[in-house]
Image (cartoon, rainbow, N blue to C red; front, top):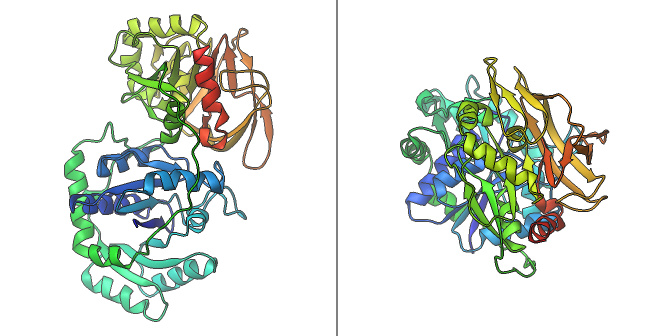
Length: 450
């Protein structure tokens, strides 16, 4: 049976992504089949996982998804691999709020029954690090925190002090990773640089793999992990691909939950990628479009200069065929996009809104959406969960666009708006996870077929 481990951290910025990528690459170059997963709604880390393992990485989230759906996604992708590495988000116990574990890496580890490795930034710490680990290990007695990995250590002597301080706590010290500033992955707004834009990919990955291999016994780690058997859960039948749906996939549009794409395929979609940056025509015989999120603001000049594609998208939306656009895809369908430098760039002009990049995030957090009218994703009353995170603000009005979302945040506060239907084109800043309501993928494919 394959093994599995959760790589969690004490906080954001402790180095868990670097550790997770280093482990993935190190195991993969040993000839093992490595499957990556990401706790939480993040899109960027799964893309980096894929770069390290060669396999799509999948999001698992205890707030957006039921425990049964988490088991289903994990089992489907865990079977047949040698080891699954699940990267946490923020700190180990951080999720939807101050008093709930929902959405946290700790909740996910308990749902799956997978042991946790805690990554600790030990810079400037000695014996105090043991107190920190003890607190994490005992905070939730139902959580299996088996091991710790110290990061950002200053010397081998520093690592020895940390190991000695941990004696008798019952948590295994797997190693101490030295501070190597050159290994730090570049970042920008929304998080790390995406895999699509990362330079020197292979060189960076191999350096991370070397870093963890020099400080850890990977064979001993693998041997110590328990086998991870999952319950058998039915996915239902799979339809033959009959309905061609185009989806934007390039450096500007790369934020998709892999499960969303899989569920569309399961419902009978043939997903055909295209690039709003580089292509001048849409793929032939499309019955619908899916425009995911990403970084259109970084490529606004190129998107605007591609007048042929903007026209094709505008005409497709006017045809009445179903279109679903979220976050960056929604921005692309607006009239214009203003960059942080104050430059205005013409977009597709489907919605008579404009957007402008701001100096700080304009929305961040979990969202639950209830449809208030029939849309390509479902009938009125349909519900789904997702996440919203963007730096752009929306401006203007479009009298021809109807607000069709009732959106609740993590505190249960509900507001009208956030989702706009114009003709058969649905646009929103919210990224929905179809695993929270599997009927939505089937409804979208059915609407495209009709």
